[in-house]
Image (tube, rainbow, N blue to C red; front, side, top):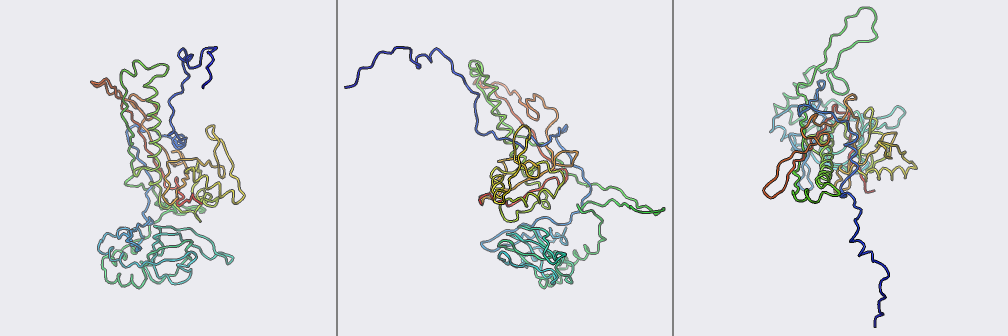
Length: 459
């Protein structure tokens, strides 16, 4: 038996709701991120749809990275990639390059093994397929002084192609397990004697008068200083790059559709079109930041100069790694890193008893290192192996840094660099709007952008 329900003494809340209205939020979305890159990148307004970066003439010295392919456990160099070696720069004999590529021998080294010893005869050209190699030289007081850290795609010993009467100027040791391809001096001597085009190319390159350039590879400006009297002063001029790069504005677009009856009848208390546009623009801005980081045409990661990319010393990002990233350029404005990379850096600092300072940027608290903000960006990819990259950049036209590009004037502009164009109403009563966001990014000089690669976030 159930107890008899007592009669209600007052109006229920369920019934009362029929006479009330609710307080509503704006439509929410989980896809919005801080988008620090969009807010901190200086934006240059482009009037003609493209932006040309004029630079001083830079001599190509063949110091790019080399690409390999593998078949099972066997690793081979792509023949055309051998033209990245300084003395093979411009060499286009495909058959000769293929023969040279096949002559490389695969070797493996364990961590700590010596690949080359300073002072011993230079007997191989070494191409690093995978792993990390540290180069050092005897220090002033008997200890080893570290020079740099090489990783997959780097190479050394290429001067062997010009002369066999040389010695190693540095010691190279594997810091991790390494797979390398080597070309022994004896094998090269046989090929050089047999392949006439190779012999002629290397001979012609060695016979060229050395071109004067500064440490950045730019054509030198001849000057004199510290003189007395009336010596003959050098004449000079500043040579320009004959083929400057041009950046065309890219676009992210979508067509927003709204039914006429919705915008006519259901516009209170919130404007339906306005909310649809707001969320669409948020999605476009997220896509913009992704493209600025990853686009193969102008993205910061693909655009970074190989000379300004280097791996971490031991895997996780340490204070030493970020110091190295800082010292490779002046006026670093900020680091850009995946949130997991920032967390990994925090763990390394904690293990050393260090506590990174925080600062205020645009009214928000951010982690800093050496006074430089570390800004999170989840658009930086993380590999399946748990590695990512950290970017350090100088920004602004005045500092010859990294800049963002957007159009100066747009018809029907809704926000800077973004417009909304009315496309009409179809026979079903659906109104369409074309929403377009125009953007690009430019690295004015190579050292404005540096990338710390192989950043492990899992340990």
